[in-house]
Length: 386
Image 1: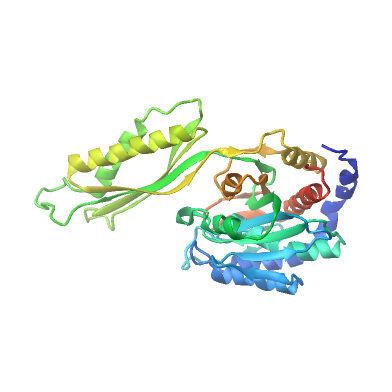
Image 2: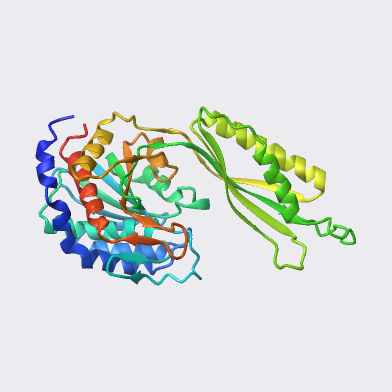
């Protein structure tokens, strides 16, 4: 890596300079955060981001055939591009109250951390770079991706990567939290649902014998009995369970949402196959309809710890007194890895109660997170990461 000192000088005092954009950033955050955007229904939020790109003077902004929002901040040379990605969807439904509650030091609201803040940064960055008189050599492609979470299975960014005209040299994925997050690799993953349904023909005179929840519980017990290796590190996360309608009614259906995660793709596939066997066994034994639906997969991979982009990111963090938190990811980073694009995922601020309607982020650390992001963009643009 080349001498980092010239870039360190540019980072000196940058955090304080960025505080002047507090009101603009928070206004963008509140406005975009109060637009519901469950996966497959992100169009209104993407249109808001496109309007912001247009107001910032980005002449080359558009919505592609998959619904992704794209804005291009042209560089002086434009031979290749830096991709800046923030997913537009959230886990919350249209019916959820999306009101953002702003205090002097924090903002609370559904999806504010995941990923309304990331989108707000995307919308505000063109204003910041212009006002700070920062002109890049490379094009900066600002990407608000759709269909990222859950059953979306990264469809938005995968479509973009397969069809875009840009020569992308490096990419950065922006997440609202946590500041210090530095993800440069993806683990193997398999995500799915197991649904149990008691058939219409069941003999209901057998008091207490039938319950989709009890059948699903048998599936869960058998999954818990699967022997997982310690090396490569592997886990099964049973993240959600839904079933039944009331206290005094036997549950006719129940659904388990789960993920298999491992450093080994072979272990992921073997574990998924074992879960499939369990589902068939329990279905045959109970007579209930038990079905397995696998709707998302990830392959392990990423850039090395010593990759220049990774080294640059750690150097920028060190200069800003940010302690890197190294952790693998199963987000958009994995789609970039699949295309052999050097990429990182970063967090912007600190927060708590993630994935709950009272999700909260702290305001003051945002500016250090912004300085970190701009610093890494400048490092890539300046050739420090080659």
